[in-house]
Length: 385
Image (cartoon, rainbow, N blue to C red):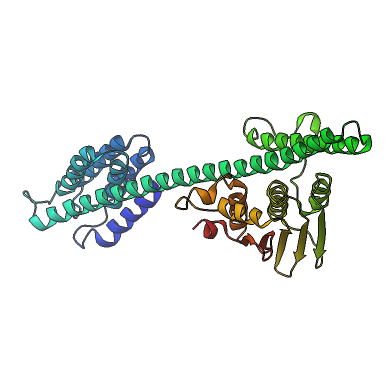
């Protein structure tokens, strides 16, 4: 910046400065270069930098007869003061900066009103530009803080969804397995054994997913990598749907699973969303549908993947779940008995993927959850609005 300002001032002096009766002065050239050197300290000591520029500029005006000038070096030094200090300091500094170029050899006193007004206007314009830049920077910082807060809130919601999915699904399965084992005590030891094995497996899976989630929360506090060099388990995806269906069957819900279309790898976030939608839907079916049969259908399409979970349970199940989706303005009866966090979580997951979700009862009884997720990446800022 100092070299550029010196070059601009030298060009201005040599091209538009001296006339034919006043040749170019070596002293003027040296002082113009020296006047730019204080700019090297303008960030740490802006007032001292401006004072040095003004002192060398006054020395130039007093030693050599040069035309009136409000040069680039002075503009940069004044801008640095106005940017780092408040108006209480910038305004007096601007008045001094406007007055010093009016002094010197060949400059009449008092100076012409037009020339003095031009210097004052130039100083005011520089101060106004610095104030505008400071305001813009404050707005950028405030916007960055808001974006950071939004990111934290989104991460909290994601963690809350993950906790809900883990707890609701696995605890429900464990409860049903424990109930089945208790009901068959002393009668069918094989059924009790299978129930206890499923109970143990569900508890182990819940513990593993909880540890994985806690590892994410501790990622900023601990070095990367698990102890002993072990890598964390991958997030569940469509490849784990078979295990999910088997758990549902062992929990007492007959569940069919069908895959249509050509299977292909999915983005991790899309695969996790599909897994959680099926997990939550089957959990809701076991909780609310009563004696029922469920169907999980996964369809691969050219540009998207659709997942559908339906059951033929009691109609009351559908009414209960629809009530769980009721907003704050609906009646309390419509939302009785359930908060609906799982279904709200489904909607948020699908919205983050840029897809669509259909939830509702079926004619003749039963309930259906259908989600359609695009396979092409969707811009995050567009989704968040």
